[in-house]
Amino acid sequence: MDLISCLNIIAIVCPLFYCVFLLCFKVCLININKRLLNDGLIYLFLFSSAVFIFDYFIFKYTQIEANTALTFASFDKPAFNLDFLISSKNIPYLIYASLCSLVLSAGSKIYFKKYKHFIFTRQRYSSLLPFLTFILYLFIAGNNLFTMFIFWTLTSVGIYLFGFWDLAKNNINANISRSTKISFMGNFALLAFIALICKYNINNLNLDVNSVGEILTYLASINANIILGVLALLFIFVFAVRFYLFPFASYVSFLSNSSNLIYLTSVSFINSISGVYLFKSLIWDFKNISCFDNAIYLISLITILTSLFFILFEKNIKIIFGYIYSIINSLLAGFYIYFGNGIFIKLYFVINLILLLCLMALFYFDKTELSQRIINKNTGFFLYSIYIYCFEKLPNFLFSILNFTDKKIIQNITNIIVGLLEYIIFEASFGNFKFSNFSIIRNILLIFSLIVVIALLIALFGGVNAG
Image (cartoon, rainbow, N blue to C red; front, side, top):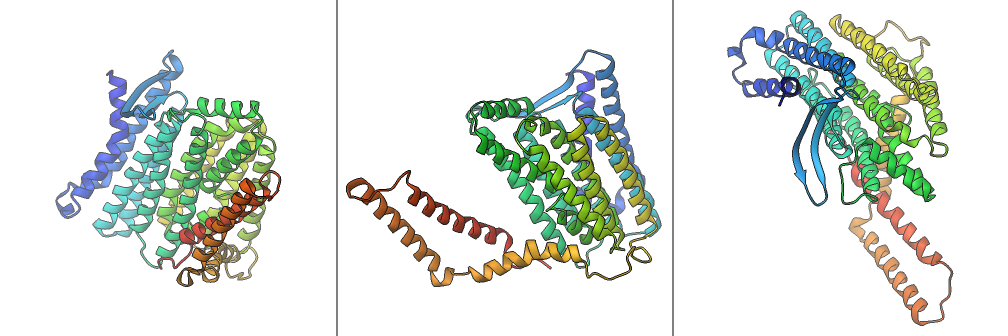
């Protein structure tokens, strides 16, 4: 293995080693070299940034297309490799991720120096930030869609851990629970997308971006419009969660209410980079699907209008920045699809870095609220209340209405449906019962499926949140 590949591997895994090192010394942090604790993250991400920038110039001025390819696990049936690749396509994202982590590390050092938190508080932050960055590196370097899904999901887990052990622990568990539910809805949508794609490539899970495009082209050639529509809907669902688009703008609101600004900045940069990378990797495969572009434009427009409206009544700076992130992500989605120019992604990265610096300045000065709202009227958190109603109160209401398990009504309904199906099948086979295209059976199965779906939704999102 050449020197560049070794440096790349070290740059990627060093954050994990640093995280594990701090966790192992959690009990005896007093014995750790203070310079290592104060400046370790800065030196770590300086090294990663330098390595990835060096890679970028190698790709730009030589004919080398990729300089690091690793396979950690390989399976035969079905064929699947857990492998990673650093190439000219993903190196800009690795550079940006390492630079943002460097900025956060420097900002956190200044913040902790001013506010003198307990050493264990700093240890938690200094452990979880490199852990999140390590997962982000592996997601970006993932060489197939299933590998990317694994680390896409782990970023949600890391964000949950970040919130659970955050700096501020006063009444944030409910909002962490709400944001985690929405995040995992996006994860399940991505898994469903991959499963549906793999239906046409069942013996090989090593699906890269080109493979997805080829399968979508094949589906278009056989006029499988319903399947294409479902795939497009699932993909929109996936990145709408990470981009905080309608109707999932509540994700960033719950994140904002769950903790302080230093948490919001760290999570927002993780979501922004991972969302943009998946969006850019797959978006052009859907360009030929009918109404796909119009659906993106409509969702983006609704997100922008609702965010601009509700920002007028808000003075909480965390919530305001949440709306700003939603607006910027909506503009990126619309402009990038309409113009197809990579300059919008570069501009997006610049704007996000500026927002990151602004948030860091605000949490340094402990500024969390404006002196007054633009429209000085207390709306009672309109949008926040709507989100809680949609994602919490409504499922609980359905749960209270459909809580028939103790009375065994669900079992009786199932028995009736099964008995009716058996009767129809018997009459259709041996009797004089006539119908066309099995329409009755289809309608009964649809009703039964609807009951099952509602039951699953209640099981996932009903009940009492941790408070």
